[in-house]
Length: 443
Image (cartoon, rainbow, N blue to C red; front, side):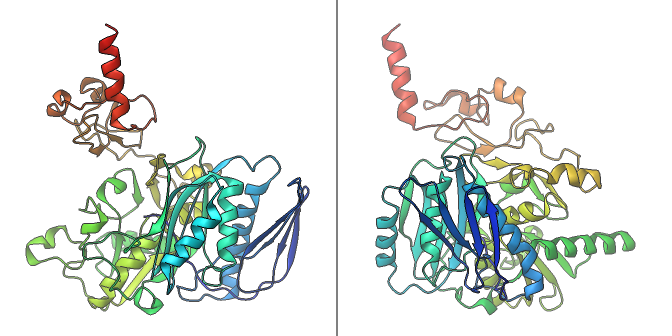
C-alpha cells in the first residue's frame, strides 16, 4: 500500500535556516529526527531536522544523498509555516524493523495519538510498521516527531502530501496486524528484515537515469524488446490504467494479494512479464506507489533465484516529488478518498518544466470501461450497485446513460446508490436507504 524505503546517509554539516519566527536546525547526528519544542502560546517553535533515510536499504555516499535530503528537510519544514498548522496533509511511511513486543508498541502509539486529529491506517507487528494517515499538519507531524525519537524509527523516510478537502480517511485504525501488506500466504515467513534479500533501492534521480538510458538504447536498436531489462509495475491493473512509467506493462492483477510474477505455471506464461527471463542477467526494475510492495515482493523473487533486482526508493510518490512527471504518464492512484493525484500535487511546477523540455506525454491513453472511448478524467468511480462496487474508469456519457453503474444489469439492482457528481465518494449504504424510505413516506 502506501509507504517508502530509504537509504543510509553520511554525516551532514550543521545548518540553520530561519522561516519567519521559526528556527530550523539541521543536526550533525547521522540519526535523523524532528524535534519540536513549543511555548504555551504555541507561537515559538524550534525544530531539529535531519535527513530521512531507511536503515532497511543499502547505503549511498554522502554526496549522493545530501541534495535529496536537503530538499526533504525543506519540504517537511514548509508544513509549519505561519498559518499553515491547520492545513490537512496525508502522511505515508513504513519501516521493516524487529519489534519484540508489538502489542505493547501498539498500546504506546494509541496512548500518544489520543487527542490528535488523525485518521487512517497504522499497522504494527513483529516486522515493523506501515502507516498512511491524514490530519492537520501539526497533529500529523507531531506523531512523526514522537516516532522518530525511538531509535527503531529514527531514520524513517516520511512522505507528505496536501489533502485539500480535509481528511482522506474515514477513521483511525491503529492496531496489530499479522501482515503489513496483504499477500496470499502472508508475509511473516519472508526475510524482510534482511536488506540483502530485498531489491536494491534506487533514488529517484538514479531511477530516471536508468529509464532514460534504456530509452536511448532502445531507440538506437530500433526496438523496445530488450530482454536484459524489465520494468515491472508491482501494482494492480486499475492503478496502471490511470498512470504508469513509459514502457511498463499493465499488470494482470486486480489485488496485490494474488500477485504471482515470476511464479507462474506454464499455462500462465503469457500474462507473466518475468516468464522465461534469464534470472542472472536480466535487470528487473520494480516500482509501486510508496515502495513497500516492492520490498515485500522482491524477497520472493530473490528466493526464486532472480539476481538483479532494483526498486524505486519511496515509490512513485517519492519520484514525482523529486523528479516530476519525467518518464511518467498520467496520474497516481492512491488508496484513500482522493483516489487519483496528478504529478502537480507532488511538485507543482514540475509539469510545466517537464513540458518545456518535451518530457511530458500529452497523448490520452485511458479508456472507458464500458464503451472503450478515450477518458481524460483520470479518476475511478465505484459502481452505483453496492453489491458490485466495481472500481472503473468511465466517460461522462456512460455515467449518465447507466446511472453510475458499470453495466446494464447493475442498473436494476435492489441496492443501487444515486449517481455521484464530481469527485464525491459513496457513504454508508444506510444513509441512502434511509433517505429513500423518508422520501417515500413524504410522498
